[in-house]
Image (cartoon, rainbow, N blue to C red; front, side, top):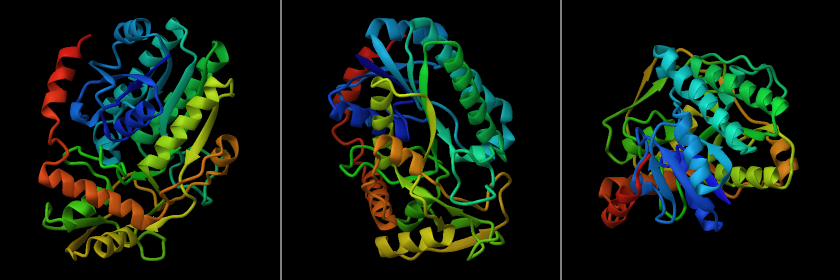
Length: 345
């Protein structure tokens, strides 16, 4: 029984692969390495460099590795970029998801965990927002993920196929063991930018929008530690393997922090002050998005372990410090060479 992880060399995907390997699972990763890294993967995982939109390749991997479940992380995630390049986002997040789904159906793989997003809600009328709230995305990123959710539901209605779609809120932090973290250059995640600025990798941090209808005028988000999110994926996979029904689940903590509160937490935990400049709102950003994750807890028994903001910040800072010192790749070159030999389509 092998799990196929698409986008498994990326930020969240690499954490997932480590967790699967820790749990004794056989894992094959399909990633084009556009934003991911070979060195982020454990040696036990098999990496195939390729395009998730290549349906024949996905079917071949399923057959060769006896795949029984797919965890689909691959996709594009930057809201402003999705507004500039909507067709690119519909290609990567919707069209290519369709190819993975078609391969799964053709090969008889009926267990599928999908990486979705809270961006499907747009600006919720009520917070915390439940899974039954209207889905009114403000940007092509959210819309492209919502289209994929609809494809999942339609596929489950027509075939022997069950899925769990996990709607992520703001994912942050890094592996507590220091094995992987958010390493993509130019990443737009608030916490990563704040940590880079605190550690001197950026001269200044920019805040977009100070006139939102929130306590301090900056956007409020529900930040979830990446390891707690990965734990939800493991539970979702076990749910499907145990015959559980398809469903959509929010992944967050049920409380929010503003942009300025996150910045102050980074200053406090790092012990470094840093300059902040203020700019206008970015198109497509919501004022406040906070999760109601009771369905996740009630259905899977999910309980977070790293839900203090200071813990999330500390793990993110530790990873950024390691990246700065070159430790993330230290001792990895030999393993990377071995992975290179195994890569192929």
